[in-house]
Length: 59
Image 1 (cartoon, helix red, strand yellow):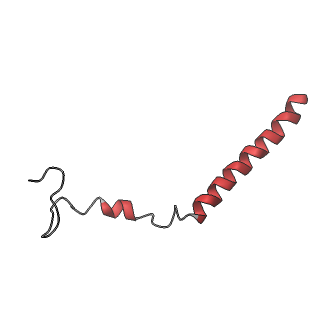
Image 2 (tube, helix red, strand yellow):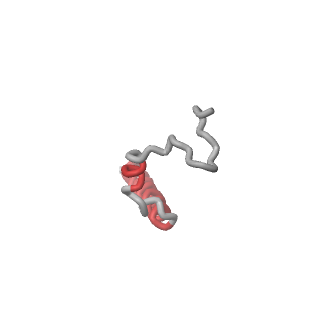
Image 3 (cartoon, rainbow, N blue to C red):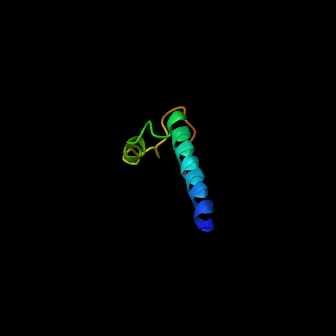
């Protein structure tokens, strides 16, 4: 029974910590652009245009 009295507050504290972390992520905009990474991989940015320095493998 004493173990249960210790585990309940620990579980509540961890749940509150997870909720605070989730709310912080929402507030800082971590979930604003969900499709950006999926679309970014489709475009080839290897070619440097005029006036841009070449990439790491360029001349």
